Length: 304
Image 1 (spheres, rainbow, N blue to C red):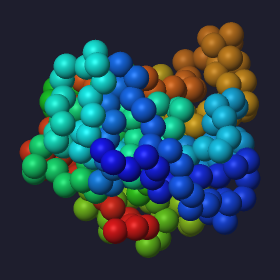
Image 2: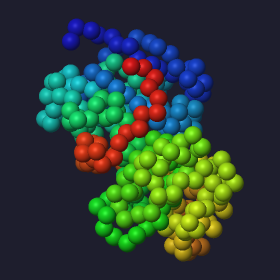
Image 3: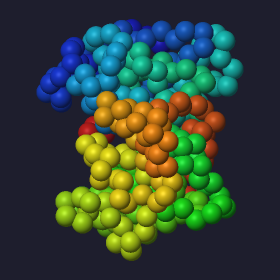
Image 4: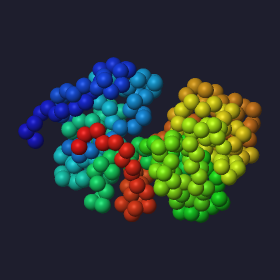
């Protein structure tokens, strides 16, 4: 590869939002022995990228300047010396580490967090899968113990921010299980969330929606909470006897509620969730997209 530098997008300190992002030229990264150098075909940004840039997530990024983006689809340019699963020219999907982001011409990815991209899954669709879909999958299968093959007892589930990255996958994945799904979103996305399979959709901009009440009066066994800013008191009256709120973006109040519910032996729980990505789950989710069982909703394309 003749080129030694690449184009990328960076920010140089916390804060500033989109205005703080700068187009730069930087050296093409060198893969370590267990890494793969990829030419990026598509990358996606998640709310987590914004939270990191704004300084909401402690200790990240690890250094400045930083390139945003966890999720990429690309072509293998150079496999590291100790890698064995991929060869030059392979089309792949990868979840990146915290050291360098995907909004660049080239990235290095860990082999253990990279999977093949089948031809049925386009690059832009594939780049939307890793962080968001793996988070939704972990919340449902590990925290809520939902079987995604339709077996098990019927569970009533509330998914907040259901038109967002994690939320839109959570609705689709939940409906692969034996669930009744109530979902919240804004007015303009009601039809979208219904099309994803939600049994009930409530508009959070209305008083009823803000109260999170099921239109059919159901009590929730699990809440996959993808939004922010909801106090425990909003969830409590809507939970079943052993209802559990799975908080995907836990702040200090969520941690305190988690501790309080445990030390008081409350039947209702709040569980802060931190996902641990792995290639097995990523491959499973990519295959679901390939088979048409779930889909990536591309709400906005920044660069094509």
